[in-house]
Length: 84
Image 1: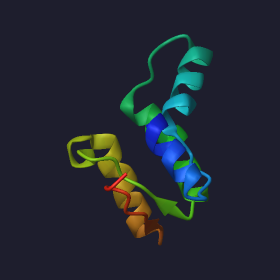
Image 2 (image 1 turned 90 degrees about the vertical axis):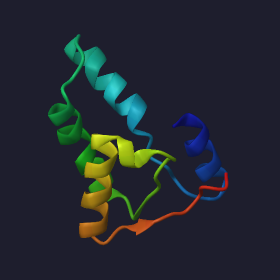
Image 3 (image 1 turned 120 degrees about the horizontal axis):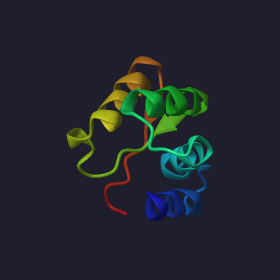
């Protein structure tokens, strides 16, 4: 996630990396968050974004699939960066 965010930033985007967001909330709660709790936190961030970028293998992640469906049904652009 961090490497992709760095590459996107170098390309001129302002990426939102979900990992530190969830880590922050887990630290606040003092526990691991459930999938549903993570999605409740992350979807509003995604809603504020203009686009989504998927990492290779995203199809195998329930959370990534949920984010992708949300993005595509809410008019987000998909940024293709599989070459970086």
